[in-house]
Length: 494
Image (cartoon, rainbow, N blue to C red; front, side):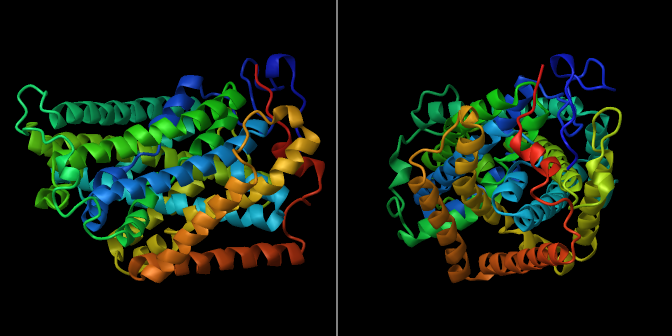
């Protein structure tokens, strides 16, 4: 990473008059309202709307405990990441912190693994959106719709970070309003006070009237954890985006403090509504999806099409954020000498153009693989990236154990967000993640394949990182001031 440039009056840099810019050349174009909405609903994708039905079928009402357990895990991880990001806002986020705390190999490895994860997510979300659009306008093939949505969002991201933020503000806003309305309408229906509802309202009876609260036993809660954990992935995106905001420290602090109620309302709240409106073993939950089935039970006309519109919005939002996230991680890697140098450069608008285009090219390649070889090549990509997010959370925990001491030693005044009960709760979170990974292997099937293939890819990337260091090709040395400036110093804003 290049050494930190000298900031001129009110946070401006030479060559970019009137536009606050971070030390790495990215524009501080995200407003606080953008960051707030990204934090609230930016990564709620199709997984919450469609994936929840499988979890309900596996665990029954006890799926609420599965969501609560994973939610607690996310809260702890976000608290740790918030501690580091509030002190050191940077586009590389946890990859840059791992670089500093654990070594160059760690920053390189987790950065590329995270980039790989989001490139595959681009393909998954683009394909999900293309399926909905193809059902409305069948004259355009599925791959054509995938190409169209990816091109549109690529142009948006290339325009400026403010364009990404504005699109995400409205996309996420629609999701937030839709889920909030679903919870409100559902609660009224549950208690029989919703005018015109076809559902008589059974109160909390459906939580226990079909075999009890845990109809498939306590072990099903862990099975449910495996099914729902991936719908939480991406909560950490706001810490990457904070580096391009007007007030990074405030944005990170606010996002970290709001994660508890976000999980409570959008995940636990919405699933609770589904389970109180319908018996968990109602066939329509699997056939139609949990949210459509719940709306149908109330008598909401055209519930399926309404949910298709909402899911399409969620998909476009997740795709937009996925492209942003992949490109910023590629940019950070480029700045640290761990990716092609072009990835680490910005254009006159402060946009990492090469990093965006490189990410979207690989993303569309994954779409092509899904279209051409869905059961072989794409299945391998999907499974080999499936557990990467859990590895990322694990690295965040281990990094925070080291970074707390570094922050206290070098900039104690910036420790404005603190992990609770440090270091005990950090170690407990590490144990929880390792337990989930171990149970995935023990459970067998797709879950075991995801862990083993992800471990294989991780071992390959770590091997490359170590080999680069041995051969002296690992970018700038970790002790160089230039490398550390982007990790150590907070970004000054006007």
